[in-house]
Length: 134
Image (tube, rainbow, N blue to C red; front, side):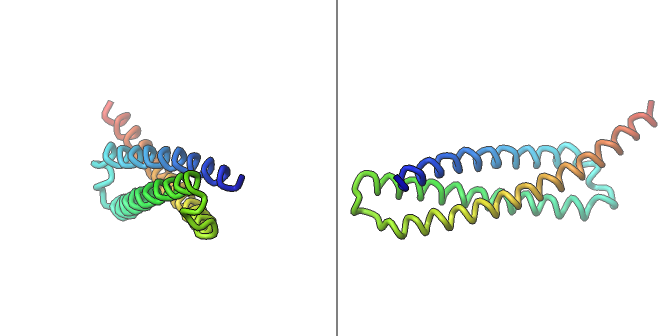
């Protein structure tokens, strides 16, 4: 029964992390979209921090995706042959992965807030400049 729960959890994690991976690409799109505004002196340090956060998050997500695949593979091995993989090791692997995913979600939320706060500020500046030109 516990093996079934771990398998379902791993499937859900894979879906969630895939969503975060897609959104992280969107974060980079936003940064690139407002690149010229980010080059202004008052925005450069914020932009550098955010780009660094995004790249760190992308690496973290890639690592977790690989670990989820490995974990799902280990669960499948256990399903196929109950003696092939140590249940305690599998449970520890699952708990460790769960902790890494929680940490990644916290990093994701923090990065998303930073990107959206900066984007909102830049959109407002862009809107004001556009109105001044009209």
